[in-house]
Length: 200
Ligand SMILES: C[C@@]1(CC(=O)O)C2=NC(=C\c3[nH]c(c(CCC(=O)O)c3CC(=O)O)Cc3[nH]c(c(CC(=O)O)c3CCC(=O)O)/C=C3\N/C(=C\2)[C@@H](CCC(=O)O)[C@]3(C)CC(=O)O)/[C@H]1CCC(=O)O
Ligand SMILES: NC(=O)c1ccc[n+]([C@@H]2O[C@H](COP(=O)([O-])OP(=O)(O)OC[C@H]3O[C@@H](n4cnc5c(N)ncnc54)[C@H](O)[C@@H]3O)[C@@H](O)[C@H]2O)c1
Image (cartoon, rainbow, N blue to C red; front, side, top):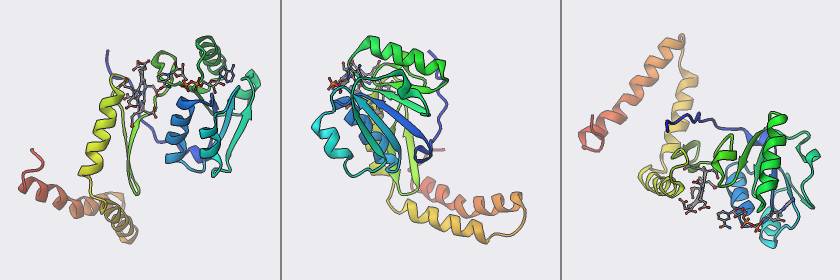
């Protein structure tokens, strides 16, 4: 199967997300959503919301918990849907209703029902890398995350700040700016090549 996934980085803080389910898998999804986007507005709907979900979300005022069964009207006014419920026919129903409304949906661990997948994430300040294995092995995605976390220096964020300031100082048209920014960063690659860490 070829790899058709198109990566994007969502401003979840500007969107409304519905999470159906309040168990362990829902908690994992909340870690992923709020860990990256602490101001995300999330409506959690579940027949039973476990105490860990309650405890974790207490510090996030934009998360709203509703302990009751899912209703189709929960899809009104949301942008994104994440399902972590333990009921296959409910999953299929929410998938169908979401598509009718042109809402993008993720059903945890059910690639066939997903419009988008969650990825493993490496974060160093302003640098964020999303890792996908096209659904082949989330375990490998996790290992690559750990590898890159160790390999990338924390100082990379300082470099980003410096480059951002430099860009603001540069005069000239777009082409001139790009040329100058490339010239300033070319040494990053050549010094690594010299030390044999990047092969050509
Ligand atoms: C990124 C991460 C985000 C998150 O969930 O937060 C994520 N899964 C994570 C972990 C993880 N999930 C599972 C294991 C157990 C070991 C294993 O199966 O490898 C582990 C590893 C662990 O926990 O150590 C079980 C599992 N997951 C899926 C299936 C079904 C299938 O593959 O067919 C099954 C089997 C269920 C079963 O056996 O019944 C499917 C999906 N999981 C995805 C994302 C999407 C593809 C991402 C990609 O392309 O790589 C996709 C397609 C849809 C989605 O759920 O979005 C997080 C990364 C870890 C991290 O960064 O720490
Ligand atoms: N727990 C795991 O490690 C794991 C791993 C892989 C896959 N899964 C799958 O992920 C799914 C969720 O797992 P879990 O461990 O979080 O299960 P769970 O039983 O802890 O949680 C399921 C949640 O779905 C809610 N729910 C059920 N019917 C509902 C309805 N009609 N409306 C609203 N909420 C409803 C329940 O109230 C509960 O909060 C299951 O399908 C499970 O097979 C779980």
